[in-house]
Amino acid sequence: MINSIKPFEKLQFTDDYIFYKVMQNDEICKELLEHLLKLKIDHIERMDVQKELKPFYEAKGIRLDAYVKDSNRIFNIEIQQVADDELPKRSRYYSSMIDADSLLKGKDYTELAESFIVFICSKDPFKLGLSVYTFQNTCQEKKDFLLDDETHKIFFNATAYKIGKDVEIRAFLDYIVNRKPEDNLTDKIDAFVKHIKSQETNR
Image (cartoon, rainbow, N blue to C red; front, side, top):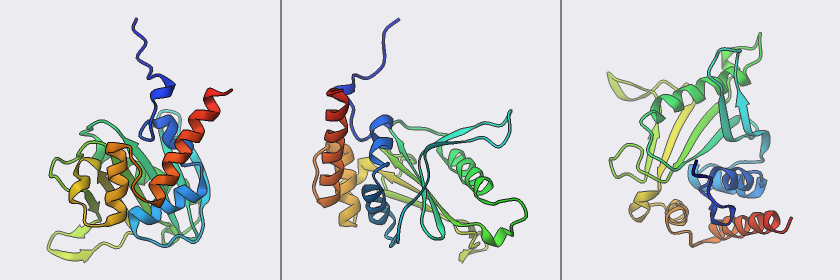
């Protein structure tokens, strides 16, 4: 059998192992979320890194790459290297599992935190050529009326980095594709990736 495991020295930020290692750095994780979502995040609390959620024995479990929260919002960040037709329903399942995990028995539904499911995709997930796809539930009869269930699903398409209007998002997606840091955040990410690889190599 041919060993298909990627050699460690060739791992990049977009590889699962390196990605979740980088996401353990609170400063980088917080700054990345702020860059991508255009939100001010007061602090980062760890729900877990690569947390596994499985409500009962026979249910399909999920393993989340980075699962964090601030004062009143929950964020899940995933890296996706291959095209996957299951992404829409996968994001739905992730959102429902996160809600079930975060709402304790006896609590009101109003206590559900606002949630953000973020997929950073190396390939265009919907093949429409957009650099960012943002989804919220809307009324079909009145498109500008939101359900206001405070769930957000956002997919970033690295292949469209050149057309991105936001400078910070464009620099990050450019880094995903070309692996060359272009701003302060991608400098930090790149330096931390090298630090991780250096530590592992010198063990």
